[in-house]
Image 1 (spheres, rainbow, N blue to C red):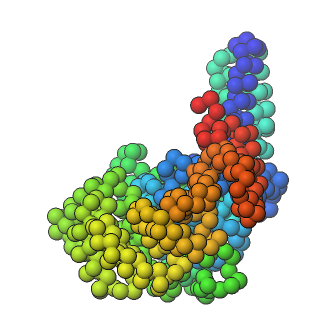
Image 2: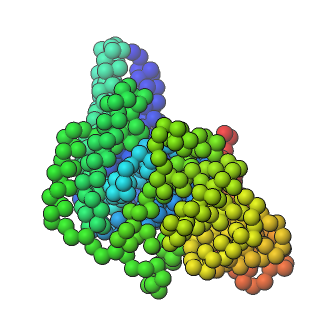
Image 3: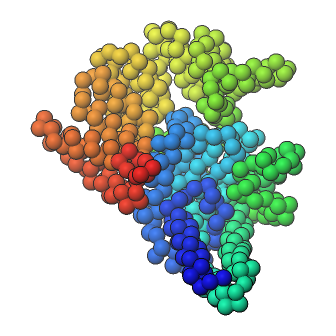
Length: 534
C-alpha cells in the first residue's frame, strides 16, 4: 500500500470518528440508550453544561414533534407526568427537571436523552400488563438521566478515540512499510473492534447501574420492585417465541437482556423491597409552593389507587396509536368476535375508536352506561361529552362540558377539549368563551403545543389577531421551526398598535427564541426546521 493511500484512509477514518463524536453530543436519540456509565464523578460537566443539555433535549423534542412522532394528548400526558414525577421525587440523586412524553409508535421501546427528556413509545404501554411495569421502565430511564450516562459516554469516546487512532496509525504505517494491504485492513478492523468493545463494556456497566437505581426508585415510590425483571422476562420470551432478528422488540435492542441480568434484577428487587419503605405521596398540585409546571397535572391519579387509570391510558393509547380510526375499531371488533368480553377500559377505548371513526352515536350509548357505573371517572365523562358533540347533540355536550369545567376548572384535558369543541362552532362568541377558558389555565400551560394551537384558533374567532399571531408563533417554535417563529414575532414587533404589555410579551419571546435559532443556524438547520441544502 502506498503512503498517500494510507493518509487518505486515515483522513477518512478521522472524519468518521469526528462526526460520530460530534453526533453523540447532538443526537440524543434512542441509539444512545445503551451508552451509559455510573455517576462516580468526572469532568463530564465540562463537555456540556446542564443548560446546554436542556437546550439540546428541548430541541430534540421539538424536532420529533415536527415529524409527527410525539403523541400530544392531555389525558395520557397527565397520567404519564403523574407517574414520572412520583418516580423522580423518589430518586436519591435527582438532577434538575424532567420532561416525560409519549411517542406515537407501537414499537416497544423507551429512551432517555439530554436534559431529562424521557420518551416512552405507545407500544411499550400496550405491551405492559400493569402500571408497575411501565413505572419500572421509566425508573430505569430516570436513572440514566441522574447518572448522565449519555454525556459520560461522549467523554469516554473522546478519551479513547485519539489513543485508538494512534494505535491504528502505527499499524497502518507498519503495514505500508511492509507493503501489506491485509495488514492495513487488520489495523483498521482491530481499532474499530476495540472501540466497539469499549462501548459494549460501558453499555453493560450503565445498564446494571440503571437497573440497580431504578429498582430502588420503584420501591421508594411504592411500586412493585420486581416489575422490572418481570417486564424484561416477558420481552425475552416474546423474542424467543417470535424467532428471527426481525421479531426482536426495539426495547431489547436498546436494552439488551440476558438471563443473568434478569436473575440479578429479581434478586436485587427482593432485597431492596425488604429494606425500603415507600415514601409519602406528592402533595396536592394546588399547594402554593409547587413549581408552575406541576399545576396542570392530574394528581388524582397519584393517590393510593393510582394504578386504576393505567388500563384506561393503555386503551386510549391503543386508539391514538392505531394506523387509522377504522383500524382501531376493527381491532376491538376482532377481540369481540374472538369471544373475548371487553372490560370497562376496553369498552372505553372502543367508544373512543367509534367516535373517531364517525360512529359517535353508538359511542354515546356505551359511554353513558360506563359513566353511570363510574361517575367519578372524568376520563369517561370527558369522552361522553366529546361523543355527544361529535354526534351533533351540541346542547347536551355543552352541559356536560360545563359540568366538567365546574368540577375540574384547571384540568388541561377538560379545558382543551371544551375549547376545541367551541372553536368548531366557528362563531365570535364561541371564540371568546374558548379564550376565557384557556386563559384560566394560566402560565403553566403556555408551553403546551395543543394549548397554543387551540388558543390561536380561538383568538382568530374572537377577533384578537395579535394574540392569534403570538400563538401561531409558539406553535411554529414548538414544532421545531424557530426561524419561522422569530419571523412572525418580528412582524408583530413592527406593528404600531401593540400596547405596552403585548410588546413586552413579544420581546420576551424573541429574547428566548433567538439563541435557539442561532444554535439551529450553527447546526445548519433552516428557519422551517429542515436541514439547509436538504
